[in-house]
Image 1: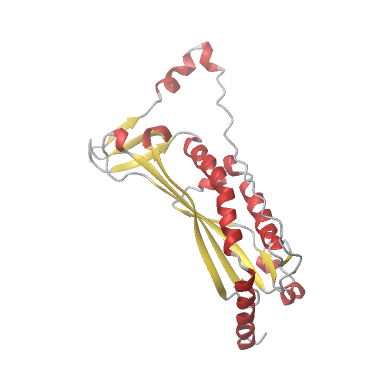
Image 2: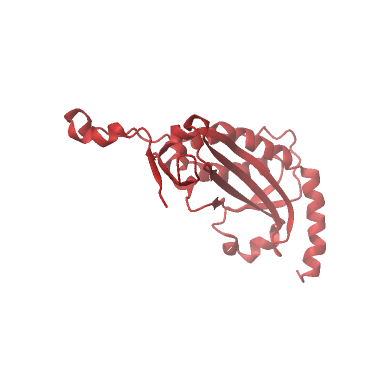
Length: 242
């Protein structure tokens, strides 16, 4: 099958090595996003009789590329692992931990903990299926956060929320270096992204949306609802022999 290979914006890269001016060229350092959020001050000194621990953030990718593992997102994991417990504390809950993994939580701590909050971040990058005029092509980026709240002993899921983090349509030619297609108007087979280009766009949008998403999480975690969920866990633990 005949394939068409198209290179975008690479002329200078191809010829840069033959001139003294470009031979010393050092590409700019990638943009590293900062993720900042501070929850509102606790409006009451009254504590809520629910004890939490928070799991380390996990990543899931739709495809083979671990988009959020590059240097642009180096600060994300530390930020969310710190901010979720801070949100819970500001709501009046007791938070134990951190623990490196669920399996490393001592039994003595599990007996004191009611609920285990685990964040999962999913990312999906969708390239165009059919070739069209280049100015009509875009790369879709979807990043979501799933929050699962489980009874600590049985791991029974008690509550969950999925929040849209990033939803972007990125102009194809701004992030793609080359691609191949079956024909001039055929299916796009392979896409080669420019080094760090899409990650940079994603990082800047994640940085912008991070305080919004954290604010939504703050609103969703309601002390009254969590107290109800804690009462529901008593029956679950009793049935499982805890």
